[in-house]
Image 1 (spheres, rainbow, N blue to C red):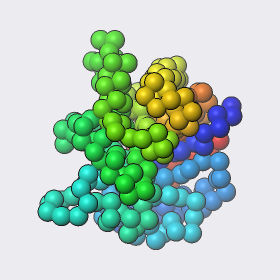
Image 2 (image 1 turned 30 degrees about the vertical axis):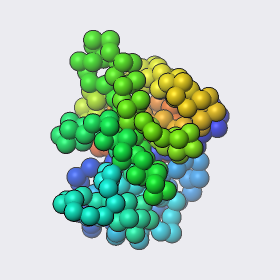
Image 3 (image 1 turned 135 degrees about the vertical axis):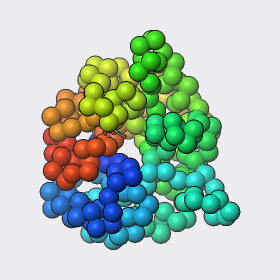
Amino acid sequence: MNKKRKLIIAGNWKMNKTVAEGLALVSDLKIDLANVKEVDIVVCPPFTALESVSKAVLDSNLRLGSQDMSEHNFGAFTGEICAGMLKEFSVRYVILGHSERRQYQKESDALISKKALAVHGASLKPIVCVGELLAEREAGQTEKVLETQVRGSLAGLSKDQMVETIIAYEPVWAIGTGKTATTQQAQDAHAFIRGLLVKLFGEAAAKKVRVQYGGSVKPPNARELMSQPDVDGALVGGASLEARSFADIVKNSI
Ligand code: PEP
């Protein structure tokens, strides 16, 4: 299906990989994926591996993402990393509001929108994560939760910024659990998000926004998920830690 939106597949390594392990992984990915032009391929190592991985991917089609970023730019914020620091390592994408950060660091939609504005202020692209809990889905609240998160996390973005923003729909019950949303559940949620973007930013902008699916994406389910009309890529956790599985997800999606 020609969606006119380029697929974007990002690997979120989370708190995994030493520098040496990260370099070994990207070295294999560079070989396996060297000929792929149809997909924007992004790796998101932990902060400690950004510098080394950034040098390793310089001459390749792999792009670099960060797993988070401060809403501030330099200053007295212990433990934080800002846009000016990420740009030193040619980072292009920043994951924001991952459900693990929403859960463990209590990140709110309001904070995520401040971070998204800071990411755009530095000419980087945010990957803004949204998704419902299992209890919320079972209570029939999926759309309500998504609407609150989308409105709150993207508050204040201009149309131009929205077009350069990636949304990752990640049902929390599917992350790291081996349970994947059915293709219909994924498509329904993506279509709902795009419909909301039409209301908030207009049809022309909404049509250009890439919405990734995340939640136990593996090589065997990638093709069917990516073939859905509103699914424009994947945010991959566990399966991005092995070159073979991440490369196969990319190849199976084309
Ligand atoms: C994620 O953490 O964003 C994710 C989708 O993880 P997994 O692929 O392991 O479910």
